[in-house]
Image (tube, rainbow, N blue to C red):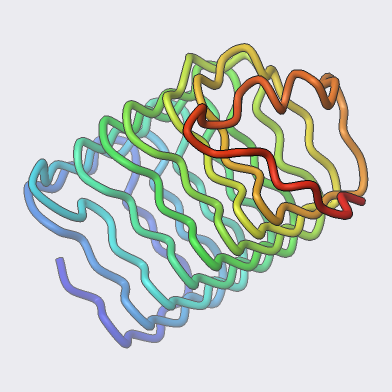
Length: 193
């Protein structure tokens, strides 16, 4: 399904939707929501959902049984409201590098990612919440700007915080963050907010 450079009202790929191959919305404009709740996206050897550079005025829903066995690419996407991945399963990476989110990010209640979860250089106006989720191997918040972080840090194996700016931490002690940093890197002191 190729919807590159499209102008669309609302996208519903949910409740039984299944793709075998890449679904693309590269550089598209979606006036309201991208709703993929309970959708199945299959493309083991590449992107299963590719929204690189898209502008989504509403929310993005990848939750309630959403499954992807390829890379979900939200790099450089502008999302007007929330990115919600509660109870979503990502067998590969969730890539949100340079994403701009006008609301919050929810990775809760059974969220699972077997690959890297990348929010490097992202800007999240409200909160990034990772609670009651399954263990993820690597979380990158490198150079991210986030208002509030609420984490169950014990379910993250490794974390990259280099350059991360945040205003408030919930449910975490800073010493717990440092223990999750990759062992090969030295901690680089910075003016965390």
